[in-house]
Each structure stands twice: as structure tokens, then as C-alpha cells.
Amino acid sequence: MDTPLIVVLVIALALFFDFTNGFHDTANAMATPIATGALRPKVAVALAAVLNLVGAFLSTEVAMTISGGIIKEGPGGVLITPELIFAGLIGAIVWNMITWLLGLPSSSSHALFGGLIGAALVGFGVGAIDFSVVLSKVILPALLAPLTAGLIAYIATKLAYAITRRHDGKPDGRDGFRHAQIFSSSLVALAHGTNDAQKTMGIITLTLVAAGVQAVGSDVQPWVIVTCAVAIALGTYMGGWRIIKTLGTGLTDVKPAQGFAAETATAATILASSHVGFALSTTQVASGSVIGSGLGRRGSKVRWRTAGRIGIGWLMTLPAAGAVGALAAFVALQLGVVGIIIDTVVGVAVIAGIFLWSRRSEVSANNVVSEVADSGRAVKIKRNPKPKKKVKK
Amino acid sequence: MIDWLAFVLVLVSALVGTAVVVSAYSLGIRLLTISGRTPIVTPAEFTDAITIVTPAEIKAAEKRAKKAAKKSPLSEGQKRAALVGAWACFAVSAIAVVYGIYLIVGDHVIKLLGG
Image (cartoon, rainbow over all chains, first blue to last red; front, side, top):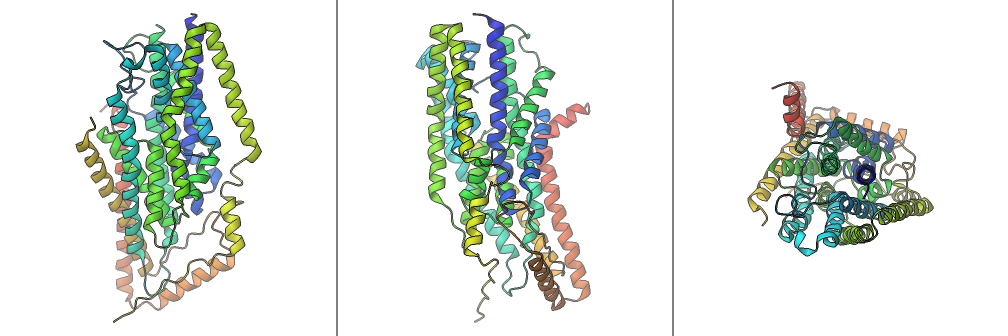
């Protein structure tokens, strides 16, 4: 096997995965400020891109295991070869593209774990996977993340409305939450950059070490940091408009106070979890927050059908990315160089196909929230109905 | 297995942090409104914005706010105190956010500065 070729391919795929991670996750930070009109769509994604770039440069430590213990790596375990990382990345990217096409916010890290697990199953068999780690690092957090964030956002929304409520019908100044939203969503974007870009940096560094290009135990190369930061920022700037649409308008109609409460809950949960070392998925936290804030405001409805679709997407992420990763690994291991080439060609064709398919019903900065806006215009929603006066005695 | 203590720590600290930031900012808005300076922040205009506010509606909102401020039973001194309180609340919420940023990048910045 020609090592340098596969290393170049893995680096290219890892950067592309970083890019899809960026545009998949723009929505986590920027869906609600766009929905409430706190920020224009283009301004919002530009802000998120810059903060992701800054965050990527500031990311403190790069994980030195690819799978975080899910695959038994290192001494006494298996050695994940570049071919398997390659197959795992194909699985992760294809699943990220599919969920983007469907407008589903799903965790990019879970897609990556899924792809790698699938590839490792084909490469080494069931023994290479530590299923207790899968349960404690992937499955339980996937249940806890939305519940935690949802509860916090629910309480925060209740608080925000209770504190600003006026029973005398005078203006309550809740417009003012739009200013706060800019800061709270920026915090989410920054936290995302520090968390997610380093995953790709870790993969590239470990691949370079495995290929003998870089010394064992040495630091991440500067060019790796720069390219990963730029890839995630570019992806973020592209804006996953389909997912922004789902998160910003699909789950519930977000008002400024709700948006602020949801974003603050997201930022606080992510910060607390990465500080304590109990990793939670940004996407799942953000989705939970939006639902929680929808439950917290009187008279707002949560569209559980959309929430259900998102939930099914989460359940599917690990097995679906795993299936694609396993298939890619099977082809690569059976056919060698030819298999890698077949994988690459098919992978590029699938990605191009999904992209072309998406053009049929394009969602962009210009129509990201239009359906809701159209229906709002059609029925002439009476805005800001006066609060009912409290009956005294 | 799962580290439940860590999870409870995450839940409690995130809940307290969020509650502090959101309560402080909300109280700031409340006090700002009491002081007679109701914030009127119009949504950004873009092609398909959900919330659209016409110039006439903005004017009407400003008028309502002014009228409410005029009718306020508070003395000038009380209004001034409310305004100071409002900015104190915004400051608390800003400090909490800065602390959040410090949690994200603090270690790294300290390392960069050679600390």
C-alpha cells in the first residue's frame, strides 16, 4: 500500500469532514437570533464563522485518541490504520450530508464515532469495540443532553418572562432581549469552535504519526491548526440553511426572550460539560434548549412531529454512519489500492449527488425562514396581544 | 459506567449560570422600563424576516413607551435609581458572560502570556 497517498486522502477527507461539521452546526448558535431578527442571516453566519475561527485557534488541547476510547486503541488494543480512518470519515461525511439534506440537526461527533466503529468492526471484529464506553460516552449523553438543556432553557424562559411581565399593559421592553441574543449566540459559536475543530486536528495528527511523517508524542503542526480552523470557519460561513430553518422555525416560534434563554442555556451547558469533562453534543444541547424554551413561554407550541424526526435522526446517526463506514472499510481492505480509489470515487459521487439533489429545493440566506413568514402574512397574526390584567380581589 | 456525579455537577452549574445571566438581564430590562427608557429594538430587516415591523408601528411603540413613562408614579430620583440598577444588572450579566469566555479560552491565553 502506498502510504503517502492514503495519508493525503485522509487529510483531505478530514478537512472536508471539518467543513461539513461547520455548516452542520452553524444552526446551533445562529438559528434563534436569525429567527427573531436579532441578526441578519448573512451577518449571523459571518459572526459565527469568525468566532469558530478564533475558537479553533484557542482550542486548548487536542484529543490524542481518535475515538475517545470507544475503539480499544494503543497498547494492548488495535492499531487504527489510515485505511480505516479513511473509511470511517467517508461514513461520517455521507451521513452528515444526508442529515443536512433532510434539514436535521444531528451530532457530527456521533457520525464520526459511528463511521469509525463501522470501519473497526470490519477491520478487527466485535472485540475491538468497547461497548461500555459506547453506552457511557454516546448513548446516555445523547439522552441526557437534550433533557438537561431543555430543563434549563425551560426554567430560564419562565424566569425571563416572569421578571419582565407587566400586568398593567404598559410596554414590557422585551424587545431588549434582541441585543442580549447577539452576545449569547456568539458565546455558543465560540464554544463550538474550541470543541469541534480539535477533533479534526487530532485525526490528522494521529494519521501523520501513524504514517511516520511526525514524531510520536509531538505537538500538533501549525499548518494543521490553520487548515482545520479555516475549514470549520468556511463551513460555518456557508451556513447550513436547511438546519437553521429546522432549528429556528421548525420546532417552535422563537421570541427574543426565548431565544436569549435558549442560547444562554446552550452555552452554559456546553461550557459546564467541557469544563467538567462530561462531553455533551453541541447539537443535542442546542435542540433541547429550543424545545425547552418553547415549552416555557405561555401560548407557544412545540411541534413534536419535527422534534420526533430529529430524534429519529439521532437514533440513526451511529448505525447509519457505521454502515457506510463498514462498507467503505470492506471495499478498501478487500481490494487494497483499487478499493481506496473505488471508495473515493463513489464517495465523491454520493456527495455531489446529494448536493445536486439539494438544488431542487434550495434553502439559502434569502428564504431560510420564508414559509413561516408567508403564513404569518397570510393570516395577519395580531402581534403583541395585550396581557390580561390581573383581577384584584 | 457513566459518571453521575459529573453529570449532576454539569446540570447544577449550568442551571445556576443560566439563571444568573437570564435573571440579571431580565431584571435590567424591567428596571430600564421602570426608569422610563423602555428599550425598543426593532428586528433586523431581511428578505424573509419572520418579524416585520413597519415604521408606523415603531413610532406607535415609541409613543406608547413615552406615554407609559410620563404616567409613571415614580419620582425623578427613583427613576434615576432604577436606571442605575438596570445598568448594574446588565453589568452582572456581562461579567458572567466574560467569565464564560474565560472558562473557554482562559488557560490558553494565560499560557500565551507566559503565565
